[in-house]
Image: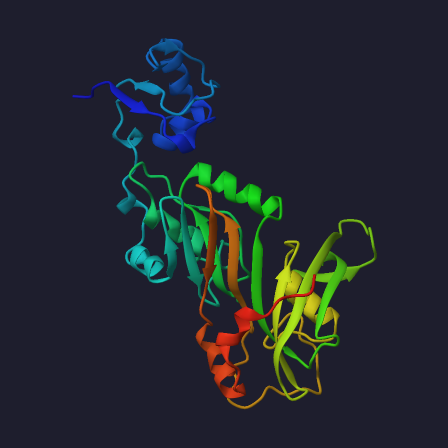
Length: 328
């Protein structure tokens, strides 16, 4: 027999509307049914009558009346998690605490779904849902073929704080790239306007005039760490803005496209060195960001296998790369 329940509003649910709170906890309860329960006083907060738009506060008690539908109870994680997804995601973990997961995203695995994509990080996060069925939340993204550090919030409050840090550019993101040729100067600042354009090969970015319609300002710092003669260079790249394909477009713009970049590498007279895979050589090496609970989150990811193979082939020492500083 169904009984009345009392649930406590969690800290990361502070500020949520009552109707959204019910949607999160009882996803199949219709809004119309909820309205009837609220109007009749069966739903109460701290013993008092409320409206569906009432904003909740952390620690408040929500009276949940008997909801006579099995489909209206919170769904168990097992119902939405694919077999093996939790194990797979945990195999990628670089860091875990009560607020965040940090994954080492493999090259070739998309962060979010899109045309023709059925397997992606966002779709697997339900496998790591908490006891209330709330799945972790993306707060930034990496291109499908870019490997490396991916931060995911475990709670709503953590997502809000991390997203605010990204918006305020309070984060430090360091990428490693292998590019054609050796940039001059060896340290520099790339500042352009980028605009999206379509094409037969899909969306890509092109450099536009200052202030052009629909264009966004993009700034990247770079530094040469090492080189293989005049043919290849290992760069650290630090994006000060977060535009689509920013590092890839900027590398191509200065005449040094990233090795293996099918969209932006255009050099007919250039051949890939023997033993090197023709895959995107761009790696999200490190992120430094204010932690949602205070302090600083600083996480580094190892090179993906295809880039480690190239580093070995070229005689690059990965242990020295983290010492490089990009020009300010």
